[in-house]
Image (cartoon, rainbow, N blue to C red; front, side):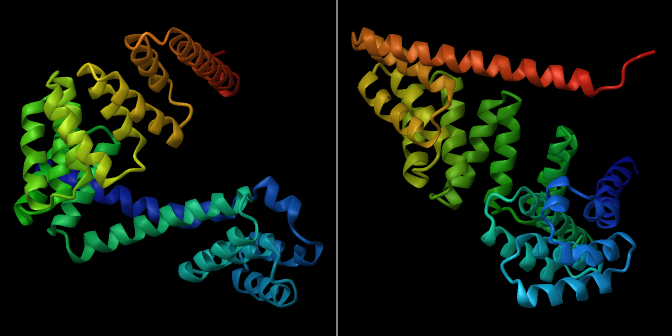
Length: 322
């Protein structure tokens, strides 16, 4: 009974979330959008906030016939269409707005909100029509993980695996779950099963490499992380981990190559500079080592300053006790 209640609760959260999202999310009046709207759209804006969605669509559509490059009008149209349940049309309008104004914050904001809503809507349909499929159990497991409910997540992952024993993503999910609990041997077992099913799987290669690094087993870590980099050359995490593994294996030149590749993908990773400093020092390159350490300190100070600013802002905006 308790498991059934927990699963019902997880599913209920999704369904209720979709309903509330549709009701409230797209009636918010962002300052940027309001400031950028053309005067001709005033009646359309008023219609939207008065709940006359069909009229808002009509007014905005007529305006767009003569002003097709107005991004704010496309956004207004999308908001009205969403309120009418016309989600695909709204998605198209927001896509056009983003093409017209790639840095428009309102376009990005509403596109993200709509994408989330569509994802939740499809999740609800999956729960309704296929409650015992492996995908349903997988998505429920991932939903539990977002709330750090690991026992419930494992239960759903195991149910997914029972429904489809060859589900690579589920095996990887269980491997990641075990790795987060520092149960590395169990994690490696799941990653190995995933690799045997699909040798080109990045998640199992990286996950196994990370496990071996934690266990200080350098050679298998290198082998798996090299495979991860080969599968996804654009993974900064894989290059960084491989650089760390080379450094532990006393191969500083190889480490430097991987760490430089990491910085090309993500220039502000502080850990990369810390490892680079060690690698340069092993090679007797003192000047380069000092430069890397200086950059690490600079990034550390920036992180600390950012954390302080965030804490200050949270303190300023939080209700104060009386």
